[in-house]
Image 1 (cartoon, rainbow, N blue to C red):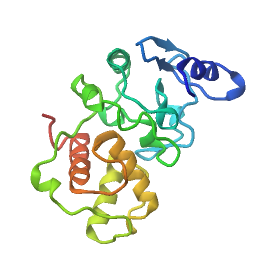
Image 2: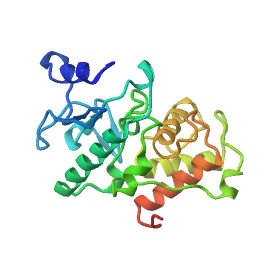
Image 3: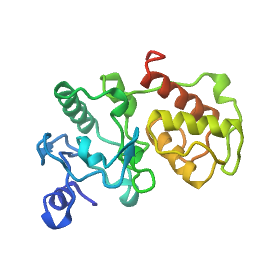
Image 4: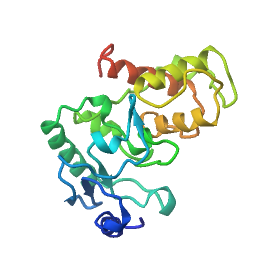
Amino acid sequence: MQTGEAAIARLRDPAAKVSSHYVVEEDGRVFALVPEARRAWHAGLSWWRGHLSLNDRSIGIEIVNPGHEWGYRDFPPAQIEAVIALCGGILGRHPIPARNVVAHSDIAPERKDDPGERFPWERLAEAGIGLWPGQAPEEARALPPIMIGEDGPGVRALRQTLRRIGYRVVPEGAHDRTLAVTVTAFQRHWAQHRTDGVADGETRWRAGRVLGLAEGRVRGA
């Protein structure tokens, strides 16, 4: 939708058959639409860490922004502070692992691109919400990229890493269009320097780092 007002109207329309637990406007106002104990219909066909139908096991927050279709822009500070406060309250009520604080684009890469590469996930992680990998060392950034169409051990390792993080990725095969869509989703969240599905050294290092943080093998800065 082009405006928050239009989005809320749609989310409240029974005929639309879509809903979310919360909406956060650009000025920081928070609208509670569905009780957390009840299912909201925001995820659709989705997958994360082996679970289908994420509507059944998630709390959905819609964050107002024109998006890639209508003039994607930075999220205002007041809005992000409201998101942080809202998420902090949710995490205080529910034992949600940091690795399960994810984007719509993570759970449905083929269909969704929100909240997108301008969303400040690093700022949320600093506030104790979700994971952030940090900056890759120079030697990692200097590694040659894995291009779409390539195959080999590097592609297999990338597939395994993304699978273990939580994405729905088959274990074998070349770096095809489907994998590129998933890599792009990862980049929108955790490697925002590019969003083209090309797995450069920075992207691969960050994927390994996210997995290490998720599995408790490394500690955040």
